[in-house]
Each structure stands twice: as C-alpha cells, then as structure tokens.
Amino acid sequence: MRKNIDINDTTLTKLKIISAFENLSVKALMEKAVEWFVIQKEKERINSLTPEEKEDLGLLLLMQQADRDELASRDEIMNILDD
Image 1 (tube, rainbow, N blue to C red):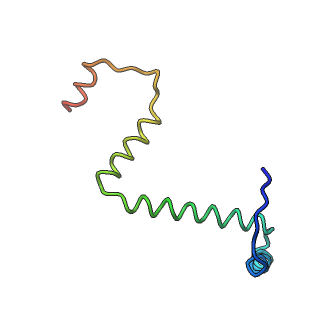
Image 2 (cartoon, rainbow, N blue to C red):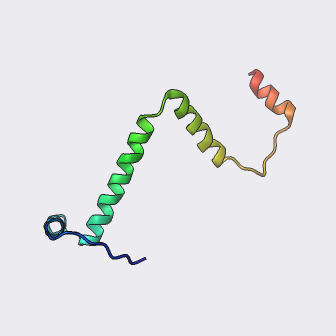
C-alpha cells in the first residue's frame, strides 16, 4: 500500500543520513523504526499490567490456541481439577 506523508526537511535529511549509515533505504529505515516503536509500546503496556491482568492475558492467549473442535466431557474436566 502506498501512502504519502509530509516530513519536514530537517527530519528527512536526518533520515537520509541514518539510512546511509545503516545501508538501508529511507523507506526500510522508517519501517524498522515504526516496528521498533510498536514493540516498545507493547512491552510498556505488558509491563504496566497487574499480575492478575497478566494471568488473564496468558489464559486468553492459551484459549485462542486451543483446538475448538476438540471437546472434553464434564468428568474429564473434574478429574483434571481434582489432580
């Protein structure tokens, strides 16, 4: 997808210099920078969660990975909980 954005001349010059040092195109450098920024924000968000919220998130992720076609009987669940 092609999008045009306005960048002031000073920032563009800095991007060109950094991209030359990194041996990347300006586009690749910007993509890398945005990817890094998003990862940092995700880490900040996760680190700010309470232990209970982290547990809930972990359970949600596990539930999303579960096979929805596989069913367990009530007895199987109760046996697992008893262990």
